[in-house]
View 1 (tube, chains in turn purple, blue):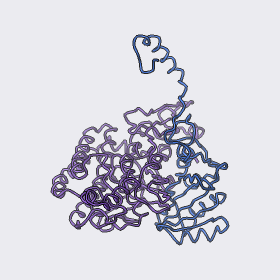
View 2 (cartoon, chains in turn cyan, brown; view 1 turned 180 degrees about the horizontal axis):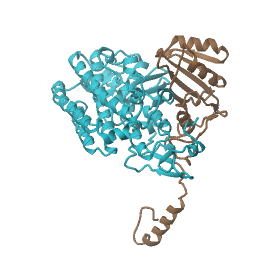
View 3 (cartoon, rainbow over the protein chains, first blue to last red; view 1 turned 120 degrees about the vertical axis):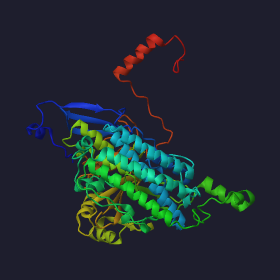
View 4 (cartoon, rainbow over the protein chains, first blue to last red; view 1 turned 60 degrees about the vertical axis):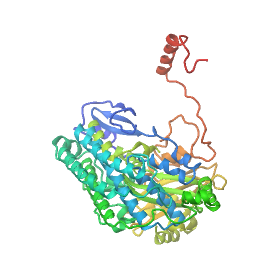
Length: 406
Length: 182
């Protein structure tokens, strides 16, 4: 199963150094480049990585176990904390899964707003990944510009949802709040700055000699291996496989907007970086189209089994009070069965495998974390690499501690 | 999901299919765990199935039911764009199943996690050790009989830590109350 070159093969290779022993080095969980706390146990032959054994789990908080004692709606704050740089995408992925079990039909406006906010979150995720990647290689200015862009987005998200990062914006059957009345003006005021920032990062990094030397050719993986290792998202697309759930099985409003899916060729770090840069542009394109075609209407499905009633109904009628009470205390009653529902999160296929036993609490809630499988393949990507290549490879995978450890 | 894929699998492995359903449009086959490797190879290699992406491998603990556990494989075909789910029931007391990590390399880490969380052993796995929990963790946390508030035994200190604690006690304890002084 292990595909790295054996010690014997390395010793035969004249390009490998004159060392005869291997050294085991610990790139510990507390390391500036190991964002998200991951420990890599490296077996080194000089500077070359013979084997890289990542140890994860430092941020394991028992998401699955906790969800088994929470009601269906109480799971939303936990999903925020999965991929915490794009929390809306996690919320929406989970809501979509449960709504499929309830066989709910959402109002059109809800789908469009979900698409807009999801893409806003995706831009955040990609800016963070690009910025942090550049920072690790020493391009600190690129990082600061990316963070400025991210902060502008967070201000916008705060106006709509009330929080910058852990927002619990989605609800089963809809959303918590509608877009603000001036959302379009606010978006129109930050969009040029987002484009500018993208251009600045591009000018600083993309054709920079040092950046290219460190990113090009390192951490490469073939399309076949990537699929076998379970890669999805930008990492798989950079290897040349055009798999994007938004195109292959459209949900929300993705079937009604035009966008492209950038695909790389070599599956190395440079391609992953370029794919993310291009995806930011496509996300902005999707948002613009959705805002232009935004339908009017409700943002919550009109079903008393699922949607909390309006407060004046709750306080002034016994039916409203009982409805509210039952949904909050007993939880939404989801029919028994199982479902696997996948959406395209920032890192790839975010799958939710949910087993319900017909009550108001999930029986089993499994999150398929996209970066878990990418970390599983990091040993393959770092075959024959040097220590310095670990940094860009680990960065471009965009491993988020909250997602991989849950 | 794919009705056609489910039909092909059930036709080829008639004896090993315990049940099928397509609730919520997710086509699922509940299969005998002894045949799982053959079925998975067929799913991956057959021209009409081509399930090259193992989207997820996980387990469920149905506490009061016999067989208690189930290992669930969610498969996807990138080319043919269809999904299939395989479920292999596992009885309590005989918690083993064959590995599929040479069929899809993604299964390597996924099976380690199932071992870690449920205690289901995968025969033939090259490196079956805990992945999210630390080595010395006792028990398998996602099992339904593992209480959510369960605490773990304190671990023995490593030698270097023990020396540091001794040193601290010699020089600093007795000069004031500390959190763990009686």
